[in-house]
Image (tube, rainbow, N blue to C red; front, side):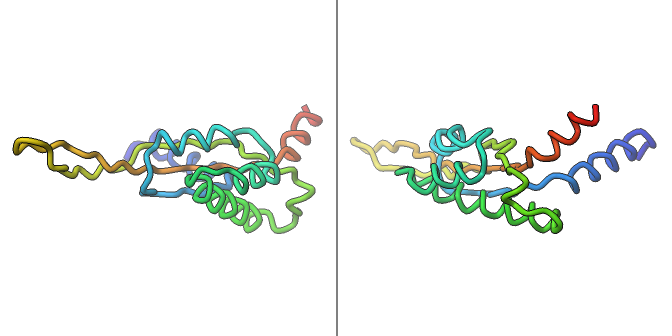
Length: 140
C-alpha cells in the first residue's frame, strides 16, 4: 500500500471513531418501503423521530426505531461525559441501500413460471449532536 493510500485510510479510520452510527443489514423488506420511513426522520431531533416511528403504521418503522435506539446507545458510549438531553441529538444521515435479492418461482398458467424477487436492504443511520456544531460556529 502506498503512503498516500495509507494516510487516507488512517484519516478515514479516525473519522469513523468520531461518528456515532448503527447499521442494520439484510432486513427482509424492500428498500422502497424502508426509504419511505427513512425520509420521514432525516434531519429531525432524536426524541421527535422516536415519536414519529412509534406511532407510524408502517412495519419498517419498528426496525428503524430499534436502529435509532442502537445509534443513540453508541453515541452515549462514545460521549460518556455528555447527557443526551443536553446534546440535542439529531438524525444527521440515514440511507437505505439494496441488499441481496432472493429469486423464487411462482407457478403460472399453462406450465409457465413467474419470477418473484424477494428484496432486502441495508440501513445506515448516523446520529450527531447540535451542541458540537454550535461550539464550532462560535469559535470561528
